[in-house]
Length: 65
Image (cartoon, rainbow, N blue to C red; front, side, top):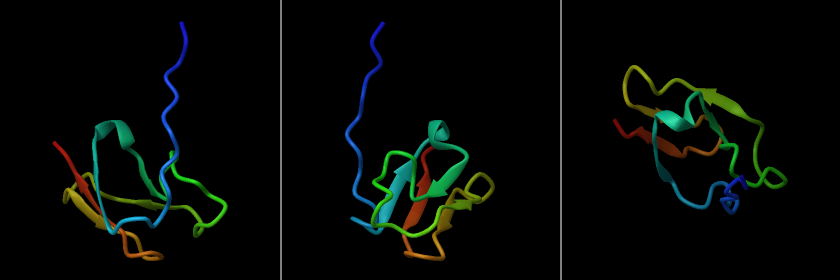
């Protein structure tokens, strides 16, 4: 069974991202983002409020329920 490979997302390419439970625990940059031109990885608590903002790049994440 072949795994589906998704293309990498450019980090900091947009300011708002919608994430799902599959993306938890949430970190910025996300695992499917290029890392070579991004900030250090930081984990964001989005489970309680449904929203989080990265302290490095100001990207906003909304949890799709």
